[in-house]
Every structure is written in structure tokens, then in C-alpha cells.
Length: 95
Ligand code: SF4
Ligand code: SF4
Image (tube, rainbow, N blue to C red; front, side, top):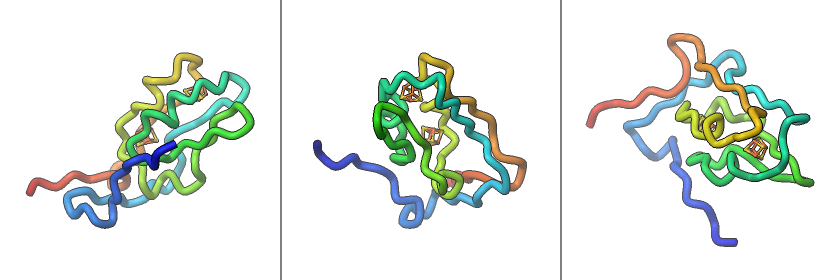
């Protein structure tokens, strides 16, 4: 499989992430059927597939763009998505 292209937030000066102090994506493993949609669609490569189940990287709060794609792509409702508290999370700056 070819390497997935992802955004390096540290090199892209218009995107800043201040990690949320709390979780804002929740995964229900028992609902996951291992379809892999979340891992396929995440632009930051924050999901992994192992033994037929998805898992979210522990450090996702440092890189998540809050696009909600994983939540939308999951047909099993195994992913719950909120937003980080105000003052944290991703910021997009105008060039
Ligand atoms: S919200 Fe977007 S960037 Fe964050 S984990 Fe889901 S797909 Fe990846
Ligand atoms: S999209 Fe949902 S059901 Fe599919 S692997 Fe990801 S968490 Fe599991």
C-alpha cells in the first residue's frame, strides 16, 4: 500500500493546533465493524486498523483538524464527535 499523504501541521504555518484539554472524539469499539472508512478518510492519518477494529491515536488532540470526516464516514455510529472547548483546538489563519 502506498504511503498516505497527510498534512504536517507543524510545517503549515496557516494551521495551528492547541491541544484540547479534554477528549472530543469518542469511539465505541463494540459498534465498529472494521470497515476502515475512518482510517481512509482522515486527512491527518489519526485512525489505525488492527485486528478488524479501528482505534484512534492517543495523541489525536495534537493534530486533529476537527473536520468531522471520521464521524460522517462511520455508518455504524461508532464515532461520536464534539468540539474542543473554546480557546483550544485548531485555528486557521488567513494568509
Ligand atoms: S475529525 Fe477529521 S482530522 Fe480529526 S480524527 Fe476525524 S477525520 Fe481525522
Ligand atoms: S468507520 Fe466506524 S465502523 Fe468503520 S472502521 Fe471506522 S469506527 Fe469502525
